[in-house]
Image (cartoon, rainbow, N blue to C red; front, side):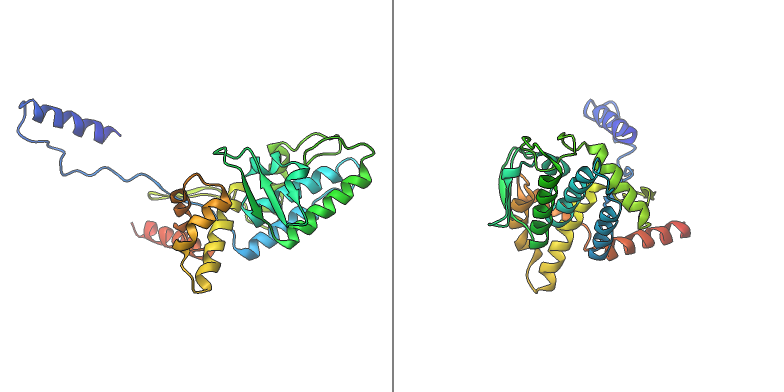
Length: 254
């Protein structure tokens, strides 16, 4: 920022004919940090979901809330939903016969109806059965709730997510190597990983990931599909790790 300001000042002096040329014109400012998101491999995603499920408390007071938190993580991992979208889901947004979820009040105020995997349909149906057996009165329209009928807070979900991350030894802090910023795992990493792994599967099928971007953009609820292109930054979890290891090696040589 300082170099740019000084160069701009010298350009101003050149325009005013106070100096002949900008003495900093050949000096290039340092590039801004490139951001490399954390990517869960499909196997790591499975381990994470198993850990969240394993740590669900089985007491009457806590089971419904923990099960709902598990469903929230499941929807982020298997369907690429944002955390806010999982928390705002209503019971009537879930359509088991169609195997779809209707998502309202999105980040860009763009509602969408998306298909969901059979395994996710099964888990949500099971949650609703548990909910029916535990609650004598159930007037709340929310899909994911705690035993006291209140919705799930971000901290409630984050606590269970972070506990699972530590359990499977993936609690990696953010690391800046040179001008590259490698992010640690977060709940948003699940959405990012869903997109990257989806594009990888499309490529493995011999199809064009670039051509699939408009469809993926609609599924993810992006305002324009150009925002979805950021998911092409890394190919998969292995590619991200190679970038990380290469950056460390180059730094050690400096």
